[in-house]
Every structure is written in C-alpha cells, then in structure tokens.
Image (cartoon, rainbow, N blue to C red; front, side, top):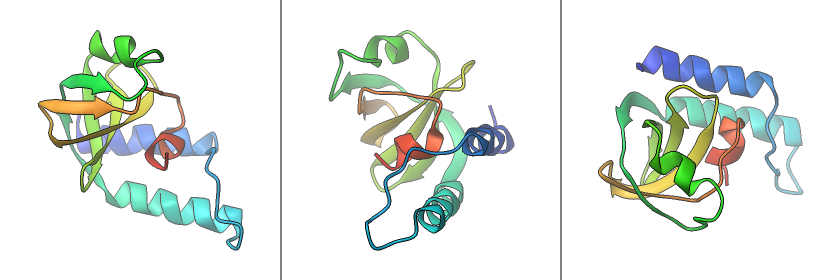
Length: 116
C-alpha cells in the first residue's frame, strides 16, 4: 500500500458518509467536512504495524491480530489503522508502530473511527 492508495481508501469511505457527532453549536455538515480535511492532512506513507493490545478486545481485536494491518494516518499518538485487503478502519494508539494498542472496534467509516 502507498500514500495514494491510502488517500483513495479514505476518500471512498467518506463518500459513504460518516457517523461523527458534531458539537451542539456547530453545523454538522461543516464539522464533518473540516474533520475530513484534518484526517486527509494527517495521511502518512503507510507502514505495517504490530497490534499488541486493545481497550475492548472482545470486539475486533482478534481480527486485527490475524491480519496485515497498516497505519495510514498519524497525529500525536493516534493512528488510523486499516486492513490490507478490506475496507475496514480502526483507531490505534502508541508511540511506536511496533506496539500499537487499538481501541477495539472497527468499521468501514474511516472518519468515524478517526474521530472516536
């Protein structure tokens, strides 16, 4: 996977809408658009990561443990993760790509996962 493919994968997800809750005082569509721009500005050259734990392991942790997982966006200690051959995204945390804790949930909604 390369950066162009990562951006395409995120944009495809954005076409399907995003389940993001906007602050009460902000226009929801404008908020989602702003968050999408922020996400796309944080896209990195994809790198394979090692998932080592999950906040909620009872959900999608096992799926990510047994799959090829790529980090495709990064901001501070947050990583947007995706599965190599699926339109799935998850939020991960960590200082190193060799030790990522994932939130535990995943979906086809890149922005929804990123904004969790």
